[in-house]
Image 1 (cartoon, rainbow, N blue to C red):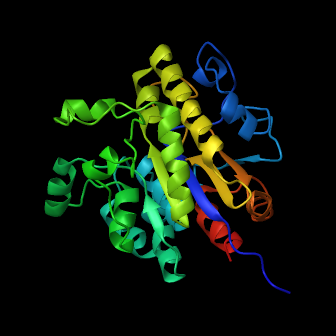
Image 2: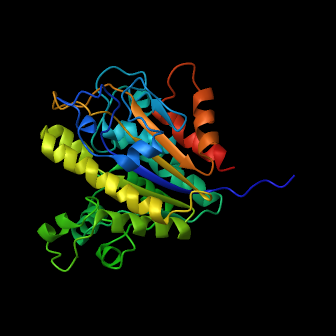
Length: 309
């Protein structure tokens, strides 16, 4: 029997989005207009209780006391290693130095490269980032360390200008403050179309959206709603251009934050994982079967690699 070809993967990583009560007084997910995300999630936004066939919850605490943080959470998500347990605490926003070897050697980009996959980290970085990264790695994120360890090219302003990369804020507005006046502002749906095109070229594409975590820390409801609606518009562009029959779309996070603006800190809420398209049912089933309660962040990469054969 011939095995079906592995699907392409488009992974959208949202920093700081947990599943909490849909209370419009504190949770912008309950206020924002999110038709695309709601559709992908099976008609129900994540609230910690109501789930669908296309969505499950992940334990972001990793069995360690304290509030989950980006450095250990993202290491767990992208390497399959329980980073918080490994170093005995939650740590972030950067990657703890003790985790650098794990990140550089065991990240999902590197695993896929070994299997012959072409991978793409779709975020663009300004020149000042490259100048900084060449001098010092102690304050690099898990995703950038993963790419450096795997040999996945980090994209720059030239890629952004030719729609071969996305700005971390989706629209590119933030680049003007960095001296890139010629970078055009992009409509979020147009940016989503660019991601869809990249997903047809590469086997694995990752886009990282950090704005939800910053919005959660700012505790500004109007800004938080705008951040979420901008992401939903990005999804519209993706869904108009993606081939779901051949592509696995995965949306997930590293820890809670934006879902509870009553606090400035992160939360211990679980985080949602939404999967749609080719291989989605297999991925969700593999994760559900991997744990007696909630699967943890560190179970995502191994499950995804298993589904991809």
